[in-house]
Length: 264
Image (cartoon, rainbow, N blue to C red; front, side):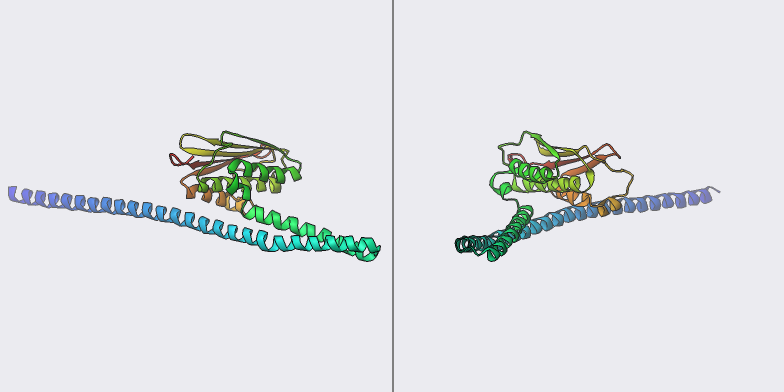
């Protein structure tokens, strides 16, 4: 009887050892899966950052070509038309003069459109003067056309931040302003740019119609809110972005973009 009991006990101990070994293998497997997941997340973040960099480089190239090639050509056309009009005016040839004036009007509109496109692709103020002048010029121009009041506050005036941080912040503000123009029905927009100890805080708040937080993100994207693009820009630099709102209560976009020590 004692022998049989010991045999049963031995089989129980072996079973316990086997279960423990399987548990250790499962734990090790989970650990490796966690490491693989973190590596995949890091790879994805690096890829997103690279794609955004390539996109901005292409935007800059197109902007330069619009300015240097098409913009200068349209400018030359304007000079020629103005000269021809002056000569015709002296000869009092009214029909031809009217046609030239119409052509000048079309050319002026085209030139303005090319400048707007080039500015939207790569704002010259951002590279030359920094974040605040670029944001002020862009927001004031676009919101002003719609009669929307602008308030710009913060502590970044006169400071240069790392180029990727300035670019991400500008693009987030640009998209948020575009959303206000398209959807908000707002009368006032407040933009805040605050640099802290280790991050830049970007806030765009409007007093418009707001939105329903219960609407799925995919539906919001289809409506043009552009949340995915804004979040990707913040996330590519290790930051985050949230959007708060309620029907009739306006919308607030808040982004936090890390700034490496010594980068400001």
